[in-house]
Structures are given as C-alpha cells and as structure tokens.
Length: 320
Image: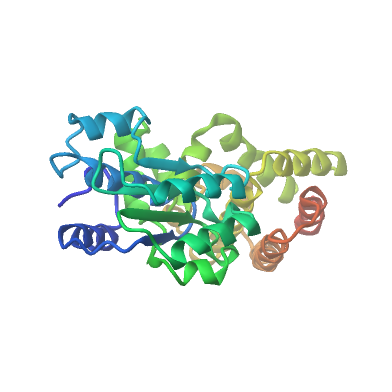
C-alpha cells in the first residue's frame, strides 16, 4: 500500500500500511515531530486510504470526493490554530458513541494537539480511557511534551524527524517551481521542514536575511536599526525561523575561516557579509552561536520576544 505524493518518512508509511492491511490500527495515534515535516499531510493521506471505497485513495469514489470537499460525515478535523476547547471535545464525544454514517470507522484528526486546553484534554482522556469501537483519534503535535502524559500514554506514538535536505530540495524543484540554485539555498535554511522552506521562499523573509547579516557584521549598524529589526522579527511570530537562520549564518562564518570551502556554505548568497575572513571573526561567530542558542531556549517561555531578540542583536553585533 502506498502513500502517493508523500515525500520521505518511509518507515512511518510502511508501519501505517502494515497496520491498515492487518486491521490492527489502534484507537488513538500520536504523530509527533518537528513542524512542517509532513505529519498532518500523512494524517490526511491515512484518512483517504481508510475512507476510500476501493481501499487505494482513488480520488474518484464517494468517500474520496467527500473528503476532498471537506464534507465527509465521518471525518472531523480540528486545526488547533489558536486552541482546542472543551466544547469541541464534548461535541466529538457525543458523536463517537454513534455508528459511523458512511465509512467503516470515524476519524478525528487533531492538528496542533498541544493547543488543547486542560479541560479539553481531560474530556479527551475520558473518551480514550473507554474507547468506543469504530473510531480513530489521530493527534498531530510539534510539542508533544505539552500534551498531558495521561493522554499521550493512551496513544500509539509514531515519531517523525526532519526531512533530508535532498528531499526538501527535490520538493522545491518539482512542486514549488524553484531553480536548482534557489532550491539549494532554501533547502539548507529549511532544517528539514518543507513549511520552513516555503517560508523562506517569500521575498520579504528571504530579504530579511541580508538585513540581519549586515547588522550583526558591522556593515550597517545603529541602535535604531536594532530596534526596528528586532520588532519586525518578533511581530510576525516567526522568530524561530530567523534565529535558525542566524545560527546557519554564524556557522557559515566559522566554516569559511576554518575550511575556505564556499561549497559548504548554507548562505552562499551572503558570502560578502562574511568577509574579511580572519581568526577574530571566526572566534566572534563561535561565541555568538552560544548566545543565539541561549535565546532560543529563553523564547520557549512566556517572555517579551521583542526585548529578548533586541538584547540578542545588541550582544552579537560585531564592532564596525
């Protein structure tokens, strides 16, 4: 059984195929791993297989058509964009004790499952403790530690890791219309996440890299620039992407000094901001890597992101 169009995650696909073919799917699954690597996409693909009348995600049968139009009565999708509230779980709890309308089973797919409120998690736990037949709960999470252990322990966990760089590059070339040079840079920035690669495809975000590099290397400095740039980074909710870029840029500075290998750079288009290459700049980059990692850990907590990033930028700015 194949999951057509799903890049990577061969072991996970093989495991799910085997569970479906043997009729051994548990009542609850947890897809856990980094953001943007295809967990939700694979969850929807699993639904297509389960609800297809041909058992092959044919795309033409009644079940496939209903899924494609988001009108299948036995499929519930909770996106978890802000939070998943108890009222939603209570409504689902009423439904799951009824027989499915069309398909052999009912499926509830919860994206960003870590966004459940405590009350919602407790309501879900009651259902998972006495799972009604003919139901599959699929929790998708990029922050599984935020899901109560009592809920996690009642799910079969399938872990996901970052996609290989070549897989992301292939996707960008074949599905996103990137040329090979652009795809190579974006795949390096993506950290194994297609969602991250698509983020960097946006011109505004891609151009921000140059502004950050110019600021911290002393090309274009000033505390007003620091404040404005820090605000822009924090305001969009994508600070993790920019800090990951900062790590990659500082690593490039160090790499260029230590090896002189331009081919090994992630940010080849910013090579001009890495020069001149000398021991002092290499030491500065090495020291700043730790400061960026420290800020990334700090931002996991309820802190003022703008101030945290502003302090970081001031700390890592190299004297002009």
